[in-house]
Length: 252
Ligand code: HEC
Image (cartoon, rainbow, N blue to C red; front, side):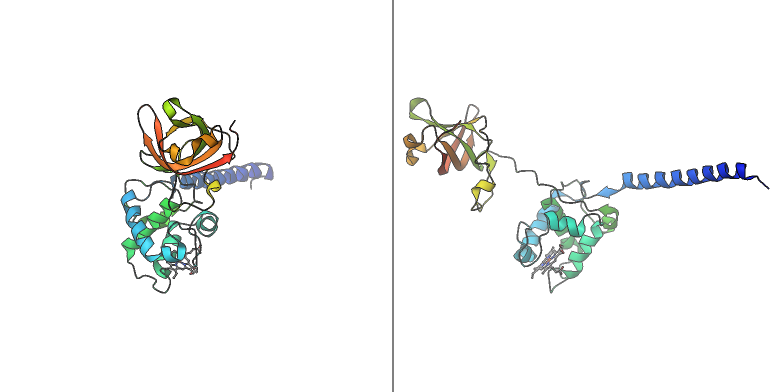
């Protein structure tokens, strides 16, 4: 019989080996695990999903997923209900119970498209392959991410805040202006939520195309909120104004 003094070190070694093996298999499972952040649907699929969602779901969950008679499908609620689960849980909930009172009526492919759209709206970027039902259980859902703001292109509808300054030849400029931010229509009533009206000024400069219509002399040197169409030329950026409002009677 082995003496105690030999037995204990042997047991300890065996135990250590088992623990190490388990830890290793756990971490390799985690490392190899796919999540919704891994580009698991295609942009075309999300685009189709947008159309189906707007037709079949938007009425109760709103086009922007913020929720109405049905709960929000993004942000805190989405994280609380679906994060940590596999994507099959989200898919099955939708495919078997939605639209409410007509669960299962849309067909697998349409439900997959809608899941792709919901993921895109939660800030997860598309990849090259379409999402299919067989991979759903192997994909983990994460809490949603802030959606990247849409790029500001030429002729985008934008808003900015800056200082009204007289330019050469009777022109009017908005100087020390904040970076132009795309305005999503319809414009929210509380514009302060989309542009930080109290924030420090920026470094951009815009030529205001139709400032004369807004009595600019009375606002020279004031801090102004401007919304309108941006026109980007090589030498300057211009704004064709649609909203022009004073924020403060000074502008430092
Ligand atoms: C007639 C209104 C209505 C329509 C249309 C509808 N839903 Fe719902 N949805 C609800 C209600 C109410 C709930 C909450 C009760 C429940 O979970 O069944 C819900 C729950 C959900 C949930 C669970 C969300 C959570 O946080 O609990 C998801 C996901 C969902 N709907 C997706 C969809 C999708 C996708 C569509 C379109 C295919 C859709 N719904 C269409 C009313 C609707």
